[in-house]
Image 1 (cartoon, rainbow, N blue to C red):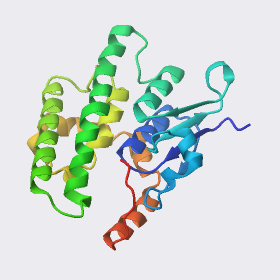
Image 2: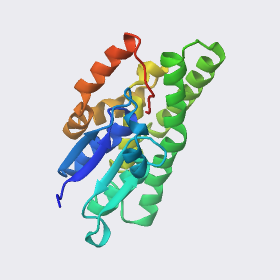
Image 3: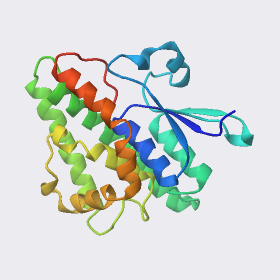
Image 4: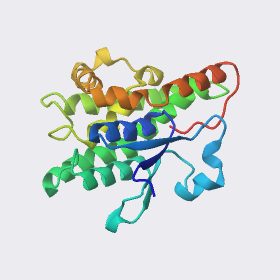
Amino acid sequence: MSDLIDLYYWPTPNGWKITIMLEELSVPYRVNLVDLVKGEQFEPAFLKLSPNNRIPALIDPRGPNEEPISVFESGAILQYLGRKFGCFYPREERKRVEVDQWLFWQVGGLGPMAGQAHHFRQYAPIPIDYAIERYTREVERLYGVLERRLRNRGYLAGDYSVADIACIAWIVPHEKQGQHLGSFPHLKMWFDTVMARPAVIRGMAVGREQREKNDFAAISGVRGHHSP
């Protein structure tokens, strides 16, 4: 059995979270691309790994007690990897709770709202002004939350952590969300700092060529089921 972690992935914000984390950890892993335009996330084999038909999913052949473990949902994967390798996820409970708050804030708020903004601004077959305005304004509000949080600190929860990794992935496509980082100077400073990390650069590059091909196909009128 290979010792490599198998990552089931497509280069979207939720996928980037895990490639960034694995690159930060310097852990060897194998990328299994799940082509969302082709609908590969709906294949039965992937459904066994991810019951909600969403990327990412991960198989660690050396899980607890040296037995394989399968994990789906990006937030759960970040927590699992942080616990296993003891990096970017504090062991001390008070510090861990602070990280968890911002991780769950991203999973439950920033990600879904930004995803809706992406959909109605970029992919909806019929423009709906109410939906565009509603989700664009909500994302702007959430950016404001980050701006206030980062006013007097370098990272979201003390040291650089899975909270920053989770959030940065969803700030990358800020223009598609109708946002301008120049309006959020502290957020922009944090964004520039995190995006300059070598592991973040490497993680963001995984699968880029395939995504660019799919973006071209989408522009040409070939659209699939997108799963951020």
